[in-house]
Length: 408
Ligand SMILES: Cc1cc2nc3c(=O)[nH]c(=O)nc-3n(C[C@H](O)[C@H](O)[C@H](O)COP(=O)(O)O)c2cc1C
Ligand SMILES: [Fe+2]
Ligand SMILES: [Fe+2]
Image 1 (cartoon, rainbow, N blue to C red):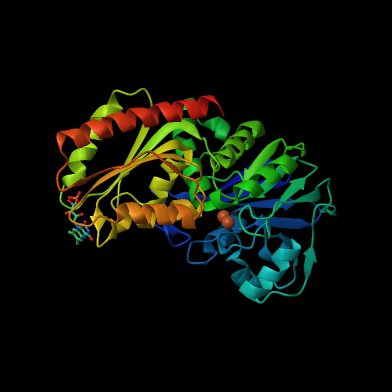
Image 2: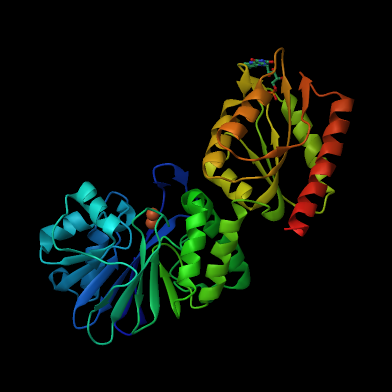
């Protein structure tokens, strides 16, 4: 829990959340911060809001107390995005202050009605509107729908030139008391980027085309500080905007010069071939991510696939289909639209096979556009010729990945 004075009359209130599955499904090994902002002009506004994952805003109230702000003095709630991680506190807040006006998008108004029964004292704002809080804090708004819900807006304070972007430019990962990206060393920022990628690929990725539109709009705003709803704030606004621009591009591929190897095995037959594949890959000059399923979570695998141009899948057949945790993870990767990857698959079967057919089905059904090299399937344990073919296919994949990245 932390309060920081970030600009004239502007404060960040931030809490760390750990040991939860974000959205009820994504594991976040390094936690997440939820950020809220107070703007004190002649009138006081709160941008977004924070509460514990249980929806209890105790921490928000105690942060307000530390700032000497009476909840009753908050006259404006700026709801950039209605998802309950940012708005779940409003119901409890209403019990102690029932005299406030909400500013949100048209779609946000609908959602506030649906989620909290809030229908009154709502002012709809959009691209052309501005709102004066006094003392120079004139706000304008940028509609950035689907980053991440359809109602999302960004709020810009012309007085301080702070842009409040909610989920856009957010990240997982606790910040350990620091709040600006500029407080991190280069190495720390590199580590932190993994968490930003985890956030992007797990939460925002599906909407990459809308992220591109949002970025075009946001680049026109003369922001001196990007203040997101999760993670660090950025004085160097270009770095995080460019990073998000790149992440959105990875959706269609080619992404980075990287390969993700995802594998699963019941009795070690496929695993024998995986060990061989790893020896081959070790000698190649390419960044490699390796994940075993179901041990590694969907979110972790997805983070790696998002930045990878090449994917290697290694799994056996199971009841005429593929090893189930592999299909589960591939379905999710397909739904997030990690498209047009270069792919090679190998694996063991016992009598009928079937993994290949399901793989082709998923690729077609989810329109993934994955391009497959000829697979290597073997009955039971892999033979010498299978291992040799795996080796040559991996070398071909590496070549294709490098070419694709070079020509993009
Ligand atoms: C529960 C189970 C279901 C299986 N279903 C099939 C199947 O439908 N068709 C097939 O060809 N092999 C099937 N197999 C055989 C496996 O594909 C085979 O044992 C393979 O070598 C397993 O590779 P692994 O040790 O890497 O898991 C099945 C095996 C198990 C344990
Ligand atoms: Fe969200
Ligand atoms: Fe959020």
